[in-house]
Image 1: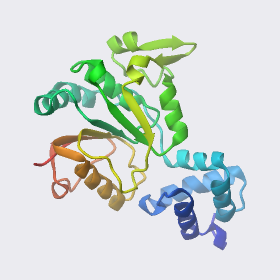
Image 2: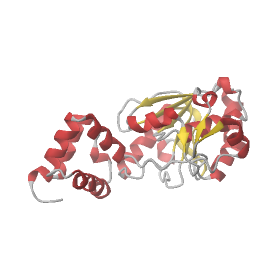
Image 3: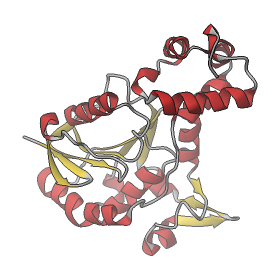
Length: 263
């Protein structure tokens, strides 16, 4: 999709920013352009101008656009060795430093697998009624799925047996997570590229979601996460990510996936 003005990517970026507040400059251009061109071709729009008009005027097309920007490949207890480190090292240390009233943010939480995994992981150390997880994502449709809490067998394959037996009910071929886990999570729509981040968190979890961001945008997000953490708070990232210049961002690396805010 190249050629005419209405298919010009600069035009698309400006219109999308005006309509949705999403800054496509923060995303890797080749990957994002390819994804959007595929979507536009599938929808049989003539080009970027017609597409932007539909994003502006049609809620379903707007939600589809936001969903298309996110990867939404999520599963419970993804990369189990990292969750084991969280269980054995990180959570006990956070409790020692800050007590059991921990403020935890699951950023870009997708279909809810991650914040619900966090509730279960924390429940080994903290009474359920004391656990609070704040979970955000840019995509309202995905957040609706998260609030429903219904998952396929593949999504929950990594859940430890004790939790699977205790907190999941089989419904047809799917599994529904219990209300006592769901009630510990507050979901809200939020865009990581916006400037207003919540403050004073003991742990932030943001895993395998910044893959489409430019290096500059990634660095900006990691710096703002640092500002959102209390001193000695922890950032938990995914196996597809690394923070190369973490020292200049005021982090100490605990291991490849856990970074602590320096005092």
